[in-house]
Image 1 (cartoon, rainbow, N blue to C red):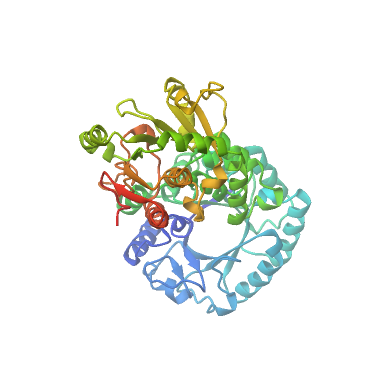
Image 2: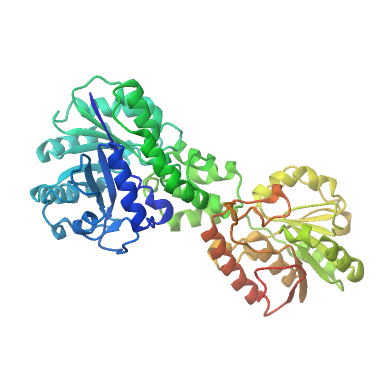
Length: 547
């Protein structure tokens, strides 16, 4: 078997940084991959939608030619057209002249196969080597895959791929499809494998395929440091080193590592990719990783909750991500309607005639600890902590709306008796302190309030705990509240995560990407502005929400 490596850092890796590598970096990466003797190098997307010289998104082959290393070149340069995503009609491409890219990768869903074959024919007529890449090969039955192979035999592209879109394929699944294709496809057509690392199997599956005895050429897709959305891809440095040591010494792995050191490491400090439990859950349930990403970014769910929601995704929606669907499933999972009129009356009685102080989990609780205690000593407010409990602060109640926080707090909440714990109805009552029947809220225990009633209209922050508590207190008759520890998010510093300095306790820290954090901050600020129409809100500690 002949094995070739195709590096897709600038294309698949671009999902991480929105393809904004910068023109100089794009040129340098391509040059170093050429010097590393990578067989096939993918330059980015061919697209009719986005034009930016600083991104690896190109509107023509001439634009790509401008960033390629000077001739003579040994590597084959290619770009991708993704049917249905950033696509560029092949009729708009100039014929292959040998000075730019020599191949085009076509990725398509099962229902787009007919269109892909027509487009491939146009590209082949223009002189390009065409790589046919069916998204989600795992979803094809053997018969469907064989029928597609028959069409490939008639088309005769340069390569046909097994695409493990969801990173869900184990060795036996990969080898079964390899043998099925290998035994039925024209031996002159190369067979490629594009892996994702959701189950940490990209490298091992590539090794397994590399050991199969066949005369066919195998193409293994990879990216530097596995850079790619979600769990990432097969790392180029690993597969090239493996081939060097076990098959033939062909690649300059040090040059690949230079790309990581000079460019990818800086991106890695700003963005995250790679194996994680949510992506493991997505792959184990054979569904698109963006479903897990969405649920993870809600920052309200345990891994068990995430798995339950993912398992409820209908089969026909698993391979293609549907944002509206996952939003509905999340809302349905959280929704547990309760009549909270009695709880509202009890909370109203507790806070009647008292100033309110709400303590969020921000780092200012530590930085301005003495000022908070002074405020409490002078004004004797009714103090409610939000999704945490800490004996260093005099607490009159604790509000909990978050599955993840509740998992951490269960034992601590039991020790807080007789302090009342206000719990939203989306959370399980298991293991929570019980109310003493016939006694008021001052006896402690849990007061359950209706989750749906206190969520807001702005989807990404609809169930933000601080906002939910303020809506509840407004219903209980509160007209003003002081806020401490509602810090918002500060930009990352020194390569730290944007969440690193925003929480007063490491236990309360939630990982967020900086862009997502800033967007949430703006949305929360807008919702606070709406609440301020009915309640006087004042910030006792520094806050990015204060206007």
